[in-house]
Length: 217
Image 1 (cartoon, helix red, strand yellow):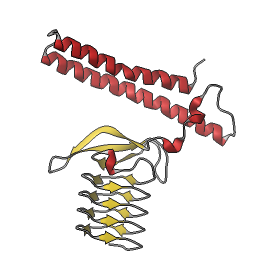
Image 2 (tube, one colour; image 1 turned 90 degrees about the horizontal axis):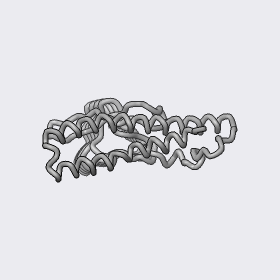
Image 3 (cartoon, rainbow, N blue to C red; image 1 turned 180 degrees about the vertical axis):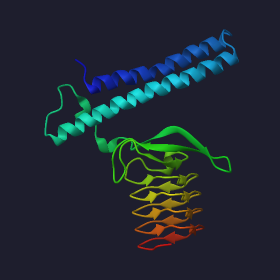
Image 4 (tube, rainbow, N blue to C red; image 1 turned 120 degrees about the vertical axis):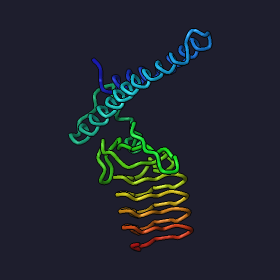
């Protein structure tokens, strides 16, 4: 009899097949048995195939976490051999990138995020805003980017901070603590917004500015 954890293990192994597939494709290309057009078509097919495999793997992971949470709520022991009890939920990533992308006017590619677990006001599966890399939004706390908000460059959002609406955070800016940036606000350059500060409306915070405490801009 299988368990969610064993099913998850199998799905992970299926995803690892991409390495063997790439090796096979590379070998055929080096041997002259595959044209560039063929490679393009094969890679496109592999993209869709592994998108489905990774989604299936993630669904199995959700099953493991769901069973673990339900067992804890009911004070029931997890099934024998179920290693989900050894998976610290707080150490799992809180979001993933979706396939959706957005390019800024200066050519920077941003990707939409989706919650992998429930935290703060965010629920598992919720779609978030748009960031360039994981550097822009911490994976280990309750900070979140939502709505049409954009965070890119060397900007960072962490702590319990929230960036939402049509807000932009970019450059080397930092938003942290319980700070909120929303509306059409911009935080850029080396600006810092922290504490319980709120930046909203059409406000722009830039340069070396710091907005902190209970300040509202």
